[in-house]
Length: 293
Image 1: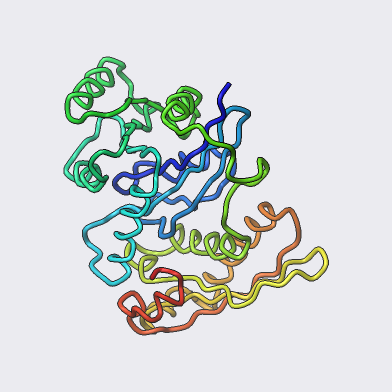
Image 2: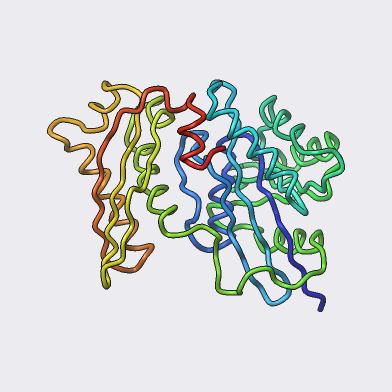
């Protein structure tokens, strides 16, 4: 059997389950997940190596129209980069839902790119007739290479998705060692796990005005000693994150540390501080330092 290898970008409007799908396909939590849109900010590669094919999945940010900062523009560029770099694009949407945001996300994919529609969350559909009718309308709306209904939550039909994707990838040797899951390092995941806690804990807008910076990451025997800073734009935001007597920050740091200990399979010390950096989401210099430019 010919071995295949290529890049598979996951694009779509926010909250369609792109990150959950990546995590399920790779078998490891690489992308952080929350119920809020725009949780993903970075291009994250997840690598799945099977005997006949190596899939290099690329999870891209969503594109909420309400954010118009320099950060937002940088995220938009990343969406375009993900679709352009791919051998095949997975256009992820929710079962029974296709609106203007979905259409806008589809239109951002370069013309001529091979696109597979992945209809996620089919486990939430109670009547199969509704799903069949939706898939029929979707097939008439665009010239998709294939349409595959799946559930990232339950794993339903993911083997079929992998089969369809493999057929669309070029014949090539593996690009990464078979035991490698991602191109990101532990430092990156430490920042992402803490940022995930911000999205899980804080109010509607505040997580979008926060960023996590890893100041120090050291291995001392079996212990990983991590020092991190949460950037915010105003003093009032810092007070919210800290909570009364610093209890909210302590709870988030503790939850992140436990996640990291499970991920790294070892002891972790996590020290976290909060720092005000005025209008960091509109500061190109700061964004370059954070890896967004």
